[in-house]
Image (tube, rainbow, N blue to C red; front, side):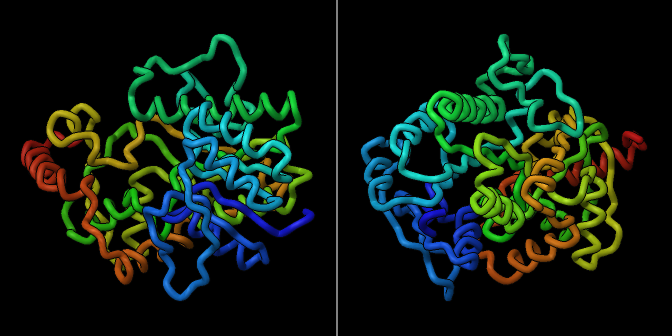
Length: 348
């Protein structure tokens, strides 16, 4: 790397904020390009430099690109092929490596994939695309398809012009500052002590800690010669079903073994609402991490190692409202649990 300057596109709320700290600790000079809607979330820690602008506006991106010679650009807020096309135009020959933060959802829009899934299983550029039969306008599908479009635009630019892209595909990310409050939804359920409903056929997952994801991004920058033109799966050191996750989370909290009631997705949808289950996935999704481990030397932590950080943040620093996935559904959830136990019709 010729200079130690890194530009983050987005990065004031969660992943980018943690990444800023880790980059600074590694000796990089960090600048965040954002709209100015969120303040630096770490009081007492040195904030990064700022460039204010709109990610959707090419002129704003070009202004950020010309601000200096960038060692690396990390794009946390590209969601469509059009977003990535603007970045390609703005940062062509303006950075040494461009890290696009994609998603494991590029696999999950496929009609079928094998677990654990490998980077090449995304089947980019295949024709016709073997997409899942679900409505492409569904938010989960639209998100994965949009990120897929980003990757296709970036990899095509790499093949045709040498655009210096690397791609990171994280699953669900956990940790302090997580504004989605998905872990928090289960934290409050465990704290209230009532029964927990779990879809009987839900899949397993491999969530990643935000600090570990940030370290992976750092490694793609530092090991740029091994990263260019490559995609890397991210994921945590633990593979857990939802029931296993809840049991582990209870132990981390020092709580008794939770009462877990398996139910069908139909029961949840009709009586409670599927939005009550942030981690109640209908399909297993396990990323293979071998590539990042071998090429970059990255090793993520297990859930029991990072869940205490989530708990500490919720109990000491979090000042927001409890998540809607808990408050809007918990009463109905407990009512269904009582009915099922009374009728003896819990799925087993």
